[in-house]
Image (tube, rainbow, N blue to C red; front, side, top):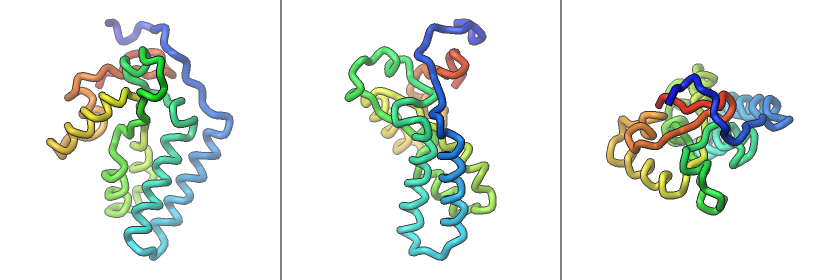
Length: 154
C-alpha cells in the first residue's frame, strides 16, 4: 500500500463545538491540577476530562479507526479505545502538571473492535513499556486516519 494514496474511507468531520469542547476540558484539567483535592477524586476527575477530550467529536466519530472497525457494521461490536491509556496520562499529568498541554495532546481515541480492545489491553498488561501506537503495531492492528484518508504508519 502506498501511504500517500488517498483511500475511500469513512469521512471524519469535527463536531461543530470541537474547539470549545477541547478548550473546556483543557481548562478543567488546568484547574484540577492547581487544586488541593483528595488524590483519588483528582485522579478520577482528570480521567473524566481525558474522556471529554477523546469524545470531542462523539464517542464513535473519532479521527482514527482500525481496519476491522471500519468493516464492522454492528456498533455494539465497537470500542472507543484510548491510544495512550487514561491511567498513564493521569499519572503523567500529576507528575508534571506544568506540561499538561503536551500530555493532553496525547489524548487520542481510535475506534477498534471489542476483540481488538481485549488484545490491546492484554498486551499492555503483559508489557508496561507498550504505549500509544506501539500497542497497535505489536498486535498487528491496521489503523486509518479518516481525516487524511490514509493508513497510519504505526
